Picture 1 (cartoon, rainbow, N blue to C red):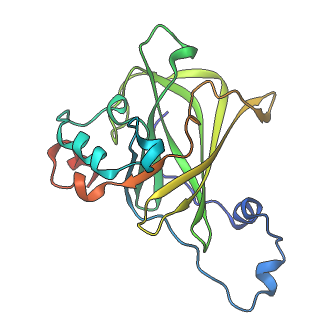
Picture 2 (tube, rainbow, N blue to C red):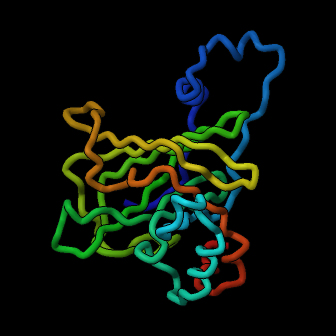
Length: 215
């Protein structure tokens, strides 16, 4: 499974997410443009004090400065969203409960995105395969992917902060069984701690050789 450019979610998806009637935009005198998520690389602060202070970009920057692997791997920075050229891609680790032969599992997938004028967003991605151990962030995996028995879908709701970062608020996991999407127990552990804030760390990556392939 190779990462590729995602498609922006359609109007009906956005309206369903916001709980609005399809007729409302047709009778509203003035339309407001959706607030877009800026291009960049988004990462969370996963330190133990995140729940107390909401997460700090300083701690992510410190981790970036002290990591010299080129390019960095999923196990180092956990869930990473790359917003580039109108597409969004996620690189992240997964729980190895599905295959304990490996220390960790990694996934990458295109992400569909919907936003509204108030800065609320819906991110969703489907996973039908994983990779053994770690993969490089922003680089097509070279290892052979291992297929999942049941494809998984992850849907994350949140808001764009005034600083342009992403505040996650809700997460839901479903899996496709017999052609239908049903609630999942999230075996890939993609919905753990959905309240994290993801910071746009692009300016802190530029000029560093291990991240040069993203720019």
